[in-house]
Amino acid sequence: MSRREQHEGRLQAQLDEVKAEITRLREKLEQAEINLELEYYTLIDELQVQLQATEQKFELLKQADEEKWEEFKSEFEHSWQSLRELIKAITAP
Image (cartoon, rainbow, N blue to C red; front, side):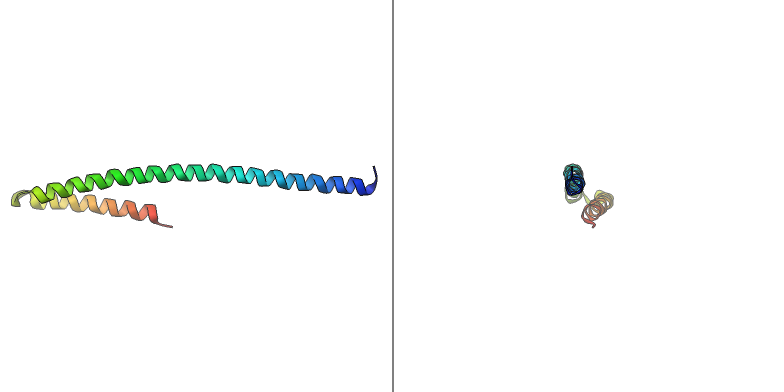
């Protein structure tokens, strides 16, 4: 084998290593995207549950008599604040 062929063989091997590394990086990125997507679905589900709880507290507030209104107002405000904090946490960069 000539020097030229040896040199070209080494260069080809280096190119092949880079191609393999790119393939590994793509696979890693795809897995990260899948994990991120699952995390977002989980967060959205959690957000939906918190929204439903807040809506229920709002319905109780609307239906409360004067005696219970302050109590339900406090519960609603706490639930509302939790919902807002969850939204902020999900949408923060």
